[in-house]
Amino acid sequence: MLFITEVIAHFHPVLVHLPIGILLLAILFHWLSSKEKFAGLSIAIPISYLAGAITAILSCITGYILSGSGEYDETTLNLHQWMGILVAFISSAGYLFCRNKNEQQLKWVSIVLAGLITITGHLGGTLTHGEGYLWKGISESKKDSINAVKVIANAQEAIVYKDIIQPILQQKCYNCHAATKQKGGLRVDSEEWIMKGGKNGKVLVAGSIDSSVVYKRIILDPIEEKHMPPKGKPQLKEQERLLLQWWIASGADFTKKSKELSQTAAVKTALSALEKSEVLETKRADIPDGEVAKANETILESLRKNSVTVFEISEKSNWLSANFVNCIKWNADIEKQMDLLKDQLIWLKIPGAQLQESSWKTIAGLTNLKRLSAEHSNITDQDLVQLNSLKQLQYLNLVDTKITLKGLLQWKSNNLASLFINKSGIGLQEFNTLKINFPKANIDTGGYYVPFMATDTQQLHPRTDKK
Image 1 (cartoon, rainbow, N blue to C red):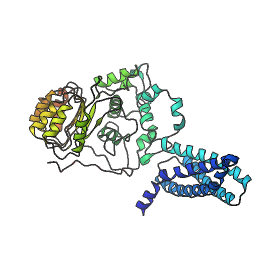
Image 2: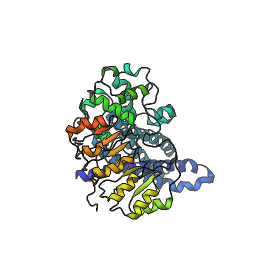
Image 3: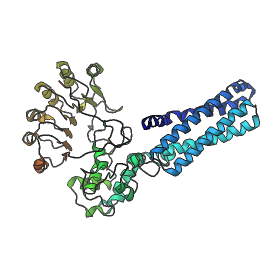
Image 4: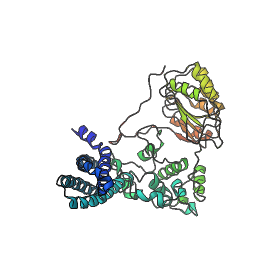
């Protein structure tokens, strides 16, 4: 029964647009039909009011079920509900007045209904997108929309939470986790709410990023359902992530200044950038500064026929990303096509790949690569030595592989910023040695658990059918 009501509730966003369109059309027909030129439209007014009333009632029912999730601000929600009920009631009255040909009452119905639809729609938008969403495009300049963190005169004297962390949360998290909407029962718009957590418990553990769900969901692969912010929403930039990690690892204090917390060289650089408004660079670090010629479309189509997801990273760029998650087996044709794309390809994802030596050699030739995800693959220390040619690499995922410390120490990258080694042949006792040899890298050793939340709808697992 619970499953059925959940399914019905999720039809509300679909149904709610029907009465808005139908009733506005009915009002337009009514106003136009007063003119002799459009008198013929009067025949469509009764059926429009009837259809609008029916869909408004269905929207009220599904909306009422959806409101039981407890994710929305009660004051705004209650007002939205009553406005919706009034829309259903007034539109029903409009149909009856049409049947009775009561023109004077119908005139007032159209005026009141237009106002109610506007107010109800605005309240619904506020519940979905957050307070003040309607005016954001007017009140915020283009620069403000790009830079979440304000310019700080002296970052070392800034209060870390108030001046640095809160602005990040405000832009990236408040739409779903603030006063108006609390997805998963979680609010992050004050110290009290952050420490309280959500429906499934605490999301932040002071001093431990490995135990802080809020951070672990941020660093998940964006393709995963649990990744936060959700796909399609503004994502955290690398320096934002670094500052958030620093704050949590340093004890998640809400009152201390930057200078009171221990700082790595990377954190100091990020703090200094705040003073110059550079913390949120408009161009990602894992996308080259230059440009490249457009890839041959025939080659791209050939890869797609082999179940390789390959696409241009942005509309204004010819740089490519390739994902082999659905590709069962590499062959000579794929290797040849990959080699022909070596100039454009900068992101490569090969989870679970069981490759021959020649295939790893082909990957080693992709010298423009910035990101390589080889989790659950058969990559070895010997293969890693071949990949030493990837000098531009910034992101390397070796989760659940047989890579050892000895193999990784033979491979150096001055640009490596993120290294994932959970469930590999590298033990926690070797972490310090690894950190010394890769001082600029954020090394993720795993060992944490991200709980499945009621709001999650999908669980992803690595492929096991590679051959």
